[in-house]
Length: 499
Image 1 (cartoon, rainbow, N blue to C red):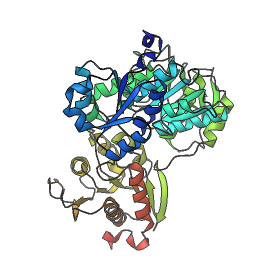
Image 2: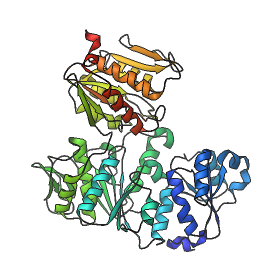
Image 3: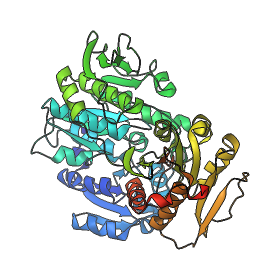
Image 4: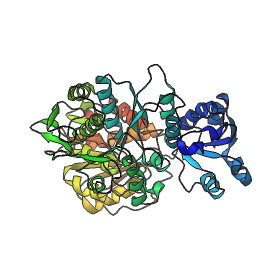
């Protein structure tokens, strides 16, 4: 079959179902039409389906499709957006009918290998629980410094299919940020080099447990070069089982042969060179251990395709931190306010809190099955207060009660959620708002309560350890809401509770 040789001719004249009308789903329409496929898009969002219809696809609401169970079997292929879980009714029905299911990344890989838009590119894949976007943007900065035609894509920048279709300039290398969802649905991807930065509890509700989550991440290691974070227990444990042709590691300490690390204030390469200095550690942004680790991973991926040391140094020097990643918002009354809304799980929140001596912690949202006890135990000595919001706020409050009972805690709740569970801590104060209070107004109250707990020298850190979608449109919306609320403070708002 042509499919076995990377070809996609078998799709010509065949009906393909695209599950999901969002950005990644819409990006599949034109390539499928270029292949001669008959495209149908399904989603629950009527407005999104209308946009797909304008792009030339047939559309069907997902409930209507599920009501006609035999109709799914008529499709030759289902291309799913990453948000669909493996047990989603539509995908379960397709699997039961023997219809192949590809993720949008799997489809992108086959499109690239088939040469639909020219010779295949070199894929440099970045995954991990935390640091993916920063590492990918660092990698893209390095590739630009090396004057290598490239694009950042996947979960950063543009969909991979859009990157493949872009011809001016034509990218020869792709810096591809991939989530565990995308990797789950992409078993064929074999990157030129792929990195796993770290692995901690996240998205366990989607994957059904920790091992399936690890297995999905490990698909980044199936190509020519695998790169693993050796200071992370789970990531480093994959070294011996890595199926890559060559596996290298990176660490914050002095690197051994086959590793990148830090020595005498420099990022040093002992994997692709014999101890060559790549860049000074000082000046890496974001500063601190997490930023250095991301820089080492980006450098390893770049070095895997022969990027010279001077380009690594120039790219890292030019790198600018993206928004909502430990960004300094303001200083009010001697209190520093920090937006790390991108810290959407406990593992990501950890370095953000530990970067400050005294912290009023703003946390809460959707924990996605992750536990916070280990985080709370580690950061308890830094906390001078906590203000919690969102659906899983009480889980965090209960952990604080167990492991940091002396820390004053405020929960900010809307009427529908108020009083759902009792928190075993007398220091906890509840602020109950009307049920119809919008998310920005809730954040305004949260920020004022945090300011009231803070004293000069403290840092109020938004590091939610949870996803945002229970209240906000995105982590970016959450961070913007925090920034706006901080902008309305003045010095009289600080430490009101102590007056």
